[in-house]
Length: 236
Image 1 (cartoon, one colour):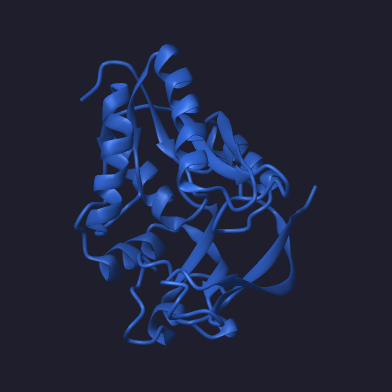
Image 2 (image 1 turned 135 degrees about the horizontal axis):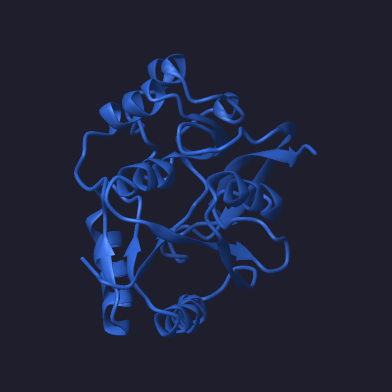
């Protein structure tokens, strides 16, 4: 365990929240770190507006810092931007980074290869835990979250904007991981035992966005992938 300060890579969703809840039993987390779009001021992948991130930070009582990324950054630009931020945090006394990843080995290895050369320890408090049981525990502990994005290749748009509860779990198709660990869906956590007050928001429209195929372009020239997003607005 590092002797310096610790931060968590904060997605705004249930996995990061469960990881933070687990960590706080024996380690103080001093910072939430989130990557957002510089142009849209929204969480990458989740589409959540920065104002809701800031509301989470206030309710959790943990400062927030963002890494602003250009639209559709190359891997080189992403890594350079992240390493600049991490180097700054290292100089400020941070030496431990937490993640909410559960079982994706290649992603874990990628994070370790990015963080370790800068002198960070990487910790994965949810690693290899049963994802169905994790979601049941999340619900049982009184955490509340809403689905803000779904992969249209894996889930119907009717799942977007739903609350995470027992019925949601029962309605998931068999091929979808209960925690959406393969990117099937993303969430925004707005209440629970580590929040001082619930975050008030309203649901806006469902938005559909498409992306080029992530597979080889010569074999998938005309194939696009899409995601549904539920736009949330922070209430005063």
